[in-house]
Image (cartoon, rainbow, N blue to C red; front, side, top):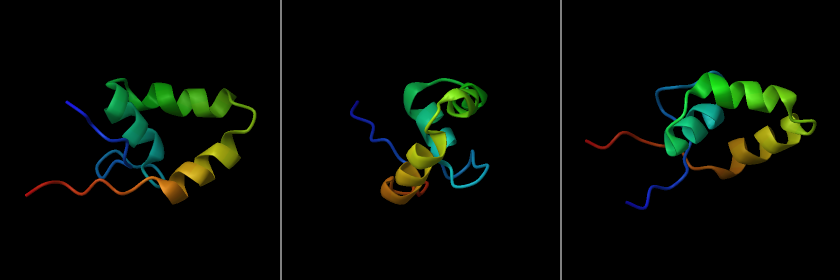
Length: 60
């Protein structure tokens, strides 16, 4: 299954970037958020991902 990386539509704190990464890799979103806290350039990476990742709209 070729699953694309998208922002989460359900697991959102701000824009859904961390939730989308967690859903894509099958890990808890808290772990992704903690990783983002400890990355020195976290704000730049987060902003780039928030702008470039497409939204994940639930399929009907």
